[in-house]
Image (cartoon, rainbow, N blue to C red; front, top):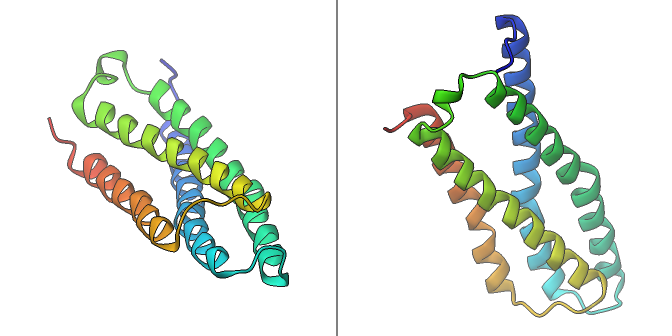
Length: 149
């Protein structure tokens, strides 16, 4: 167990929240770009511009924010006593966070598909996938704030 001072702990917690918000912004926006990309003709100027936007959002915002959220989250978990690691709310939160990580990785797979002009999904698919991070975010916030037992 780490024993961070209260001030350091609060700074790490604040930075963790900022990282998560940045990551979530990308998780919520990238599928919307995919919806637009479905409308663009392969090789068109719009398609090429969307490829650049998707790459930048993923590589320059989402990936660093996800890494920062992970590192800061691990530091926060290491600061609590080991008997708290198995509290229901924390385990449930970590399951939902794992699902968010899976969504992040799937979005990268889809991004690569668009990059290679090999997208196989429809606008409807991406509209539905756009809701998954929102639902997970809501569940995570509820679990963290309400701490069910």
